Length: 134
Image (cartoon, rainbow, N blue to C red; front, side, top):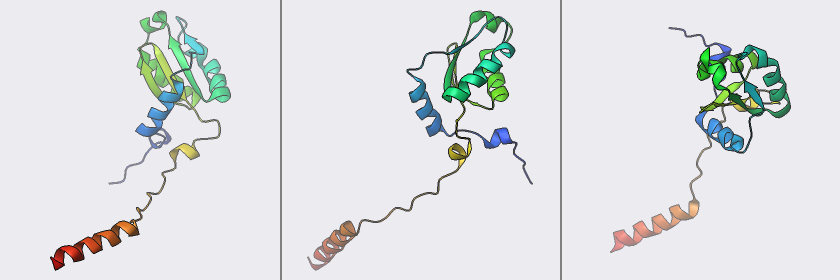
């Protein structure tokens, strides 16, 4: 069975990456507000801020929640601006789009081979020899 993945599905940030981005965004203040006009009106501003900053917070006003759920708003903004939703906490959405392109963030790094410490092995061998003699 062949499963085809869309670009959206391929471009998922790892848990570690999201955690790091949440930490970076902790001190940021919201730069865009979504109000009763809805998310369509603010897409251009979100896109501009993402180009400039890369990581932004968007505040969702209560009036906007009358028409849409905050998670729907987050997904709409992310799709329209080619960004990833880092977190949705309360009425604040954190969005991320790298300024230098997605390639750096999506490339899987090869696992490093663990080098065995030769000194530990030597000490272990000496200990084994002493234990066998006694």
